[in-house]
Length: 462
Ligand SMILES: Cc1ncc(COP(=O)(O)O)c(C=O)c1O
Image (cartoon, rainbow, N blue to C red; front, side, top):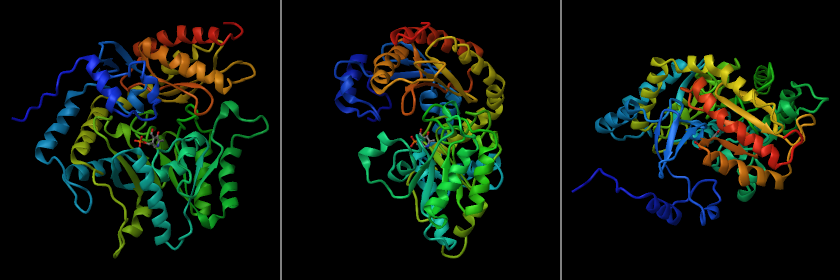
């Protein structure tokens, strides 16, 4: 007889099976030979619990995605109800009610004429699809050589080979070279380390220079996050995206806003492009679209981009079995109901200054160099010297982040990211239901830890 009950395992059994069979993503598997893997078994609101019963504050919304918080039985139920009605049908030449409803709902929320939604199973697939859409759009409109994409240094746009060619993190690219050709990179908006002689708007002009350098006939798209995650929540200077839009229009280059993280309330708006008041040709999204209760992503394209695909024999020659999965779409609709019914965006807008102030309150600790970000998406940059902004070398970063901060944050009950894909930062991206009490919980763990980190690195004043 079929049973719906999973085997009940002890924590030790789970550890043993995980170590033997499970391949973690982006993880040094060797480090689990002598240490336990973090195994998360349950979530409720802003907290999760591991297999030993330890409680953690989920300061990263798992991976920038559980936007409405954990344990929402109503959202899970919407998925179960849909699975009973129509467990699966594909959007590969067919439609079904949940993906139709969701596409219409997304179009009603997305800025301007972004009215056409192509669903995927996640963020890398959304970026991959947008890059392919850009190439085919240009071929259909008489510009077959517009294949290159301009992205920013240190930006993360996903791991599939096309998306990886837009990703600007050398360490992630190097093992897989040669990548899909055409990825070109320009400086990001790291305003904390902007060279003294530079005007912040030079950062936008760098895109025009690069298009000229590559040859305008060969460049198809620019892809950028509203706030760049990797490197530590780089916000744009005033007017930056408006200038990028002008440059894209001038050179007939498509502007892709990669909002895999920055949509669905992360910055206090449904879309990051609204926060910074620009109109992209495409938005790529994923993660918070379902608050991660099911895997889903999407490309949201403007009427102009969709138009050549809607005539005669044309079709976008690209598809994914699970794009628009009915259960994921039903969950996304239920997630958006929660956003509306519980004023999730208002909560972020109201409390963003409180989160910022709580983190800025750490700036008396010698190792804290900068606090930056927007909405519920913040980074604390760690430095050797606050005045000179001197950073740590590779060996020190290894010791500070992987030898001390990451394990200690987890041990003390705070899930967040200690990252050195750029200069070392601690990143926070709490569920959008969090408020002042939760921020106090975060800072209650961060403050003593950063004080200890300052002492460990022998910083003056610690
Ligand atoms: C901006 C951005 N683009 C793309 C991706 C890739 O998304 P996924 O991990 O769902 O494939 C991510 C993942 O974090 C991201 O942050």
